[in-house]
Amino acid sequence: MNRQDTEPPAAKPATRRGASTAPLGVLLGLLLVLALPGAAIAADTLAGRWRINDALTREHAPPERGSTSTSSGMPRPVIAVGGMPIPVPGASAPQPGLGGSSPDPMVMRCTELTVTPAGEELQLEFHGAGSDRLRRGRHQGVNSRWNERKLTTSYETTTRKVSQTWEVDRDGRLLVTVKLNPDQGKTQTHKRVFDRVEP
Image (cartoon, rainbow, N blue to C red; front, side, top):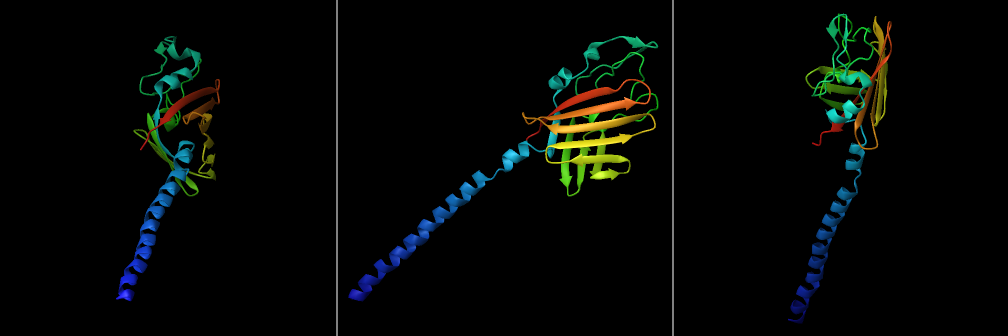
């Protein structure tokens, strides 16, 4: 009788230990999740979906952005709401992407884009304009380099040199700088600002 009375109390501490480790495991799991730097890293990387910030893009536009002057009787393009291309400075300079020349980079013709790393490649999806897949180094005439925060590309056509720099700034925005250097005429620099689209 005495042994039977003493056995249940001996079993109770074991169940208490098991019950106490379960909440401890859950607590440790939550702490690990909260400690993961995934959210902070994602805010500082090129990867993700981006949407044009019209107001900040206008601020980076050349001074001639509101000009209505004409060249050869044809009106010059101006900034359009929705992130269309920025106007080209120089009244007599040929318009890049117009008149049969090579088209402007797709980043200048879209309002949203998605950057997806894929090993040694980088997939760029320009919503409504097309897509591109970059490889590190020189591939099919395009020279590309990138890290988590910055991408640079450059290539030449029969009429001009084109270079792009994509960089995530301190505010977590994506600043894209496109330089168009035609064989004839002045180099034009266009800047576009994108905000991250939260999933």
